[in-house]
Length: 273
Image 1: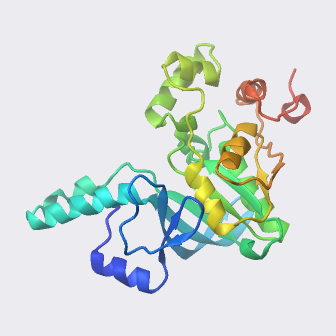
Image 2: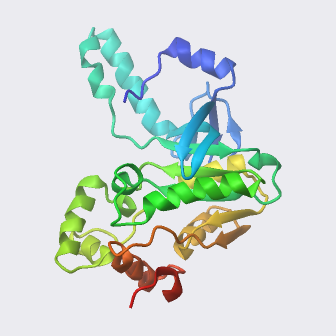
Image 3: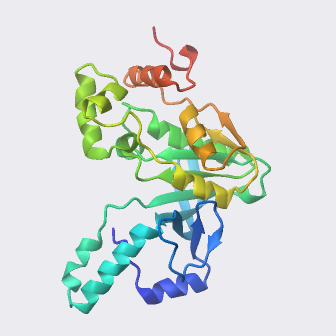
């Protein structure tokens, strides 16, 4: 996936209001001006009408693609160097591994008194392959259904750089092998010398500031740490909504580890002995 945009196309998208820039508090910045050094700000492309088949039916949402300005600038600088040196054949270098996050907007959350929101960490095995070693895929599908059925409008913030609670797909594969040897999901991270949870929710907070603002929101999560991290970024009006789904014999031990780590999951939620 190329992360580079032709400068002429970029200008056209800015003129059309389809390329935006926001700061850490969701306030709009001029996308043509160089962003302040050292500050968190995001570029957004959208809205893009997107018919999706997630959950129990077909839904139409507005998709926004989101990326940090610092990472995008590195790609644009490299593109300029390649053009000047006649290195168009090297443009494959622009297929960067940088995290391009997404927002799926359902209805009109900007008009809702308390929109329903899901901040979802990417999970290739669960979201795409349908793996039952976790509950991620069912959580994503159920979140879309619940937001669509809610009627008040809401959104999904999909965090692309959060695979394996932030350790990446390669390390996540190794933790699965360690789990098969008897460790739980958090112990496996520690065995690799990695944090139990290294996810950064600051970008998600910026997007929620932009799309929701200072209004209350209902967050589909069982994880108090996620709420605490978002609150530290200035989002103090969050009401947690329990989000347990997709429980199976394959992931019950995984969910028990989450419960023991502090997730608000009860014995009656996951069943079993």
